[in-house]
Each structure stands twice: as structure tokens, then as C-alpha cells.
Image 1 (tube, one colour):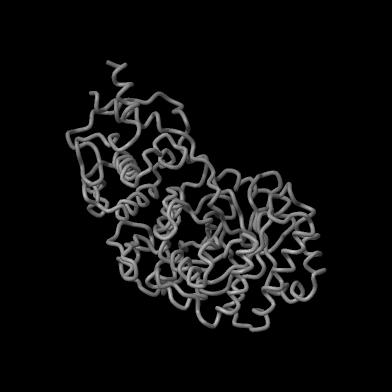
Image 2: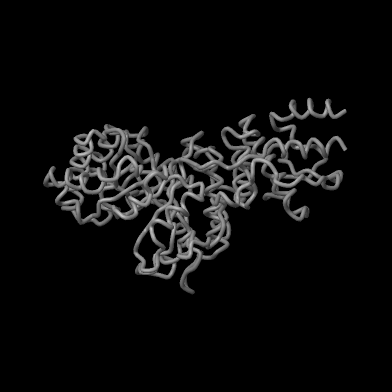
Amino acid sequence: MATFFFFLLSFLICFHFSSAEPFIGVNYGQVADNLPPPSATAKLLKSTSIEKVRLYGADPVIIKALANTEIGIVIGAANGDIPSLASDPNSAAQWINSNVLPFYPASKIILITVGNEVLTTNDPNLINQLLPAMQNMQNAINGASLGGKIKVSTVHSMAVLGQSDPPSSGLFSPSYQPALKGLLQFHKDNGSPFAINPYPFFAYQSDSRPETLAFCLFQPNAGRVDSGNGIKYMNMFDAQVDSVHSALSAMGFKDVEIMVAETGWPYSGDSNEVGPSIENAKAYNGNLIAHLKSMVGTPLMPGKSVDTYLFALYDEDLKPGPGSERAFGLYKPDLSMVYDVGISKSSQTPSTPKTPVTPQPKPTATGWCVPKAGISDAQLQSSLDYACGQGIDCSPIQPGGACFEPNTVASHAAYAMNLYYQSSAKNPWNCDFSQTATLSSQNPSKYTSLKLHLSSIAFYLG
């Protein structure tokens, strides 16, 4: 019976609310005719763990609706604004006077993006005007005494990379490097992020093998070894982000911060499109969120999570292109979830159970799901991300959580694997995780710092 009490108490001690995540944001596009009022959207966002929202423009009604919510706001100047912003400093000052000063600081504007995927328009005039436009915008911010409080950036497509596989060989396309050199120096000088749009969805569309799908969805898989440095990658997101880091390093800007301005997976598409489905979209976004919350980082940037803006808050029904372009939304216009990725505060585990915990039957001799010996951290991290993406509460193993220490992949994986198994039908295949886990009579609390606390409690319980 003592083993059961160890298990029960470990989870009682670890229960608490999943806090908002400062590195998780969402894109709020408006190419639609059926969106709910901005006031309703602000209320919706406050009911989630999302802390940032990115607008593609600077809609004053939306910016005002987000006042006093403490939600960070990214606003944008359109590509069509770039020529005037570049040629006339007064134009940039007027842009700040119109779109920032009436709302700040009640509306927590944190970043202004100047243009979207400008380099890959391949318009030489627009490309040449981008840096001067950003410089004038930064000067206008400084002139309003907001320097350091609001940053300036621009957003790039992954197509600015000329080489991305393996990640260690990431390089920017030679044709874009002259423009990028000035932009990256701007980022370095002003402490602003290099914003990029990685989409594993598009990578899967070009290579639709089952093993590629698992790699893209953060599901257990064999991994892919980077031939340049021997690192094994367990998911496409990390590989894409690290390829950008390598490209930055190759140009001498390895310390410029990366921001993921867009990433997502469509839940529906045309009949000839490969990849869109509710299951895949839920797996990608849910497992991505779990991966970010784990704070494991990427192989080349460990120990921190890149600021990531999910695409998107709502579907945009007026967008052109294939059906998938109109099916990236996490929420419907009636504010209900398209599918649950665990960002709603109402779906997160309360700090204390509202009803007494009913003791469950004593586990059998093979009642615990634990990591197998000899499994690499990369494989365990993949299994950890998968488990946490399936709706279980992994907040106790996040920084500040009761079970965060010891901060090792093995410890966190033990917690997540066992919680997933105990929450499932407890079939043997619920503790497989691509052969990285096994059923055992050994209590997984041996992996956590709770062992000593639980031993003390067990002593007092007699």
C-alpha cells in the first residue's frame, strides 16, 4: 500500500495551475468577414495562457480592446507603407503618433514589424527601402521616449535560406545576404529579434512519408542525425529554427534573437492537399506548445524557448489560395475551440481538487510507466513532448513547478510518461513511446526531487 501512497501524494503535491507562458503568442489575422468583435476576442485571449498577439496592421479598435489586459501586442506597417516610411522621417513619426501614442502604455505594444516577407517579393526597390524604413521607425520611437520599450523588426519567409539541411549547414541565400547584412546589424544594435516563419507543414507536403509526418508533429520517431555535427534532431521545428541560427552565425550574428512570427498546421484543406486534418493540427500545435513549455530549447539554443506566435487565432475565410489557407484557426467565430491544444485556462488542472481524491486500486506489479535505461535524451525529449501534447497536465515539470527539480530530461519524461499512462486505458501500448518506455513495479518518483519529501510523509503516515 505504501507504493500507492507514494504515487498519490506525488501528484497531489505537484498539482497547480498552468501559468501563462510569456513565449507563446498567436497571430490575429483579419482577412475575413465573420470575425467576432475585438472586445469579445480580448476576453477570449484573457481566458487562455497566451500572453502575446500579433496583428498584421494597426487596427485601433483591436489595439484599444486589448488595453489593460497585459497582453503584449505586435503591430505592423504594411509593405505599401515602406516607401513613405523610408523617404520621410516625418512619416514614421506620424505613424507612431497615430498608431502607438494614443494607446500606449494601457495597450502593451511591444514590437512593430515593418513589412511582411519583403525580401522574397524580390522587388529591388522595396528591399532597398526596408532598412531605411526600419531606421526611421526606430528613430521615431526613440523620439517618443519609447526606445527600448518597443522594438522594430520585419518578418521573413523561410525562403530567405538558400540551405537548411542539415541544420548546422544553414545559410542565407547569397542573393539576400547584402540586404540581410544591414538588417542584422540593425537587430544587433537595437536588440530586436530576427522574425521568421517556419512551417513544418510545408516541409511535410514536399515529403509525405509517414516518418516525416511523425518528425513534423513532435511524435515519437527515429530522429534525424545532422551530418555536420552529429546531433540527432527529433522534430522538424527545432531543425528549421536551428538552420536559421546557423545562417545567422555564418554571417557573424549568432547572438541576434530569433522570433517565430508564424507557425501552424491547417485542420482542413482541399482533397488534393497532403497533411491537413484535425488530428494533425491538434498534434502539431499541442505538441509544439508542450515542447515550448518544457524550456528544453533547440539543440543549438538549449535551455530557453524561442518566442513563438501560433498561426492563427481564427480562420480567415477571405484568404485566396488552397482550402488549407482558410483553415489554420484555433477558434471559430463563435469563440468555441476548433480543437483543444491546452491553452484554455478553464481546461487546465486546478491547484487543489474541488472534490476529495478517491483512492484508486493498487497498481499491479507492472503498474508504472518509466523510461527504459540507455535511451538518449533526444529520444526521451520526443516522448516527453508527445505525452505533454496529449492533454495531460505537465505544468509541475515546468520551471517553478513542484516537480521541475531535478531539471533533467529523464526526470521530466518519467513524470509525463507515467501520468499519460495512468490517465489512459493502461494498455501495454500506452507505455510504449516508440520503445523508449517500459512498465515497471518501480515508482517513478525515484526520478524526482519529491523522493525525500515523500519519504518523510510516508514516515509520518507510519
